Image (cartoon, rainbow, N blue to C red):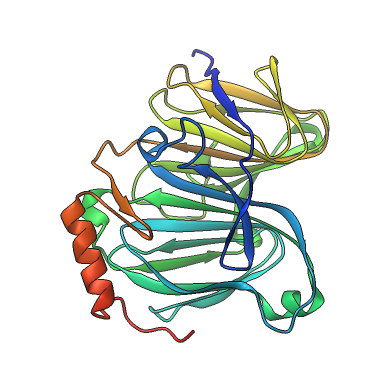
Amino acid sequence: MKTKNIEIVVAPREPHYVGDGFRVHNFIPSGYRLDMERMDPFILLDYNSPFYFPPTDKPRGVSVHPHRGFETVTIAYQGKVAHHDSSGNSGVIGVGDVQWMTAASGILHREYHEEKFSKEGGYFQMAQLWVNLPAKYKMSTPKYQGITNSQINKYQLTDNKGIIEVVAGSYKGIKGAASTFSPVNVFNARLEAGAKAGFTFPANFNTALLVVVGEINVNGSETIAENHFVLFENEGEEFSIEASKKSTVLILSGEPLNEPIAAQGPFVMNTPEQIAQAIKDYNLGRFGYLEE
């Protein structure tokens, strides 16, 4: 197999707030050369790098808002988030946990700092990924996968130098905890200093990584600093990473859907007419009801 080389390294953009509880750097789709078509099926990546929120009696977050046509994947590295949606799902995403919400035909939800975390304050660090749905599933029934860290299957590296958490897809025969609508791999590589890990994905899959903690070397040739994003070329299948110091790396690889993308705010469909219908359905209350 051929080596999958780096196409571009992207530094974090200036952060902005989503609501009042998520201070994020957006990589997809606003990062240089990281538009939705290039990153398909990954259509958004917001990264909340470590940020201290002081104690408050009123939990910070994002009030009720709609989604249609895709899935949201929230990965917690520090802090806790409470979730409620119009399908009746609710839960708390704690450190190491993942929330995989399929908006599909339409859902309302809200996300807030968990009450105890809000009252105590603390460091908050999260990644939220949007995964596009194939056209045939965009109007399917919404669903919710709350995945605790204990439910995430893990591959142990040699010499106890680290683990690969397989959230979705598969790694060396270890299957991911999340079910997906198209071939998608989402891993957390948690590496001790000096640890090495190799990855193999089809050449045509759009493949990237984000250094969440620490510093790594890719393919023995390029050092990648914390909070930086790496996009790989769509040639070759294999790449390797080595941790210069204790590191956590989010690995993403997915088969492009190669379908038209029409996006407006919280709606991602295939045509402008479908976007107009989504707005109409939302305004008519067809996404259900959820209290603020």
